[in-house]
Image 1 (cartoon, rainbow, N blue to C red):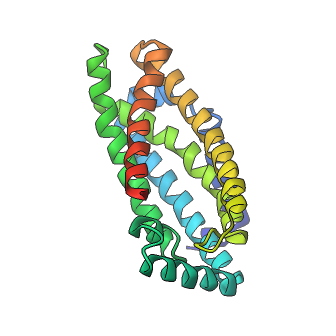
Image 2 (tube, rainbow, N blue to C red; image 1 turned 90 degrees about the vertical axis):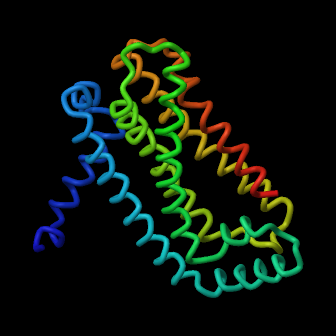
Length: 226
């Protein structure tokens, strides 16, 4: 228990995450040797990031309590007048939408693992492996999760509410696209490079396997939003 109060412990943890994001931990060799153990490491890494995110989230919420509650009141009024959808209302209700984010991350990881593997089969990748592919996807999701931290800072200081101006939506939307786009770029690059080495798959095919389920998921979210 004492180790959690040691600065050296958190320095080591940061070094581990740094090695994951820079792919310095030889993921291909590690996944080949024991894909199940590698998935467990990724589960722990994702859970650790989420705990840190949730802690920072609640700290920002307490710091900006008045602003957040004003946003909640405006959002509830807009929902009662049917000005926004139920999905949008829950997505922007502070602070409990952080719980929805947890479920969204878990659901998205399960969805991607289950939908990308059949695509490998459709493309005729002979040495495909569900466990190894899942390990790659879990690792690639770290880039997305890390990109949520700058978004947390932005959203906590400039929360989007039902009474927000059109220009606020546009400005924050552009920031979201740029930040998540950066996360997507590194996520896709890691998945494609690792698949190419592990499954001897063409990089373009790997990008299709990585992108297609996500584009379909975005389409479903667009339908839910409206």
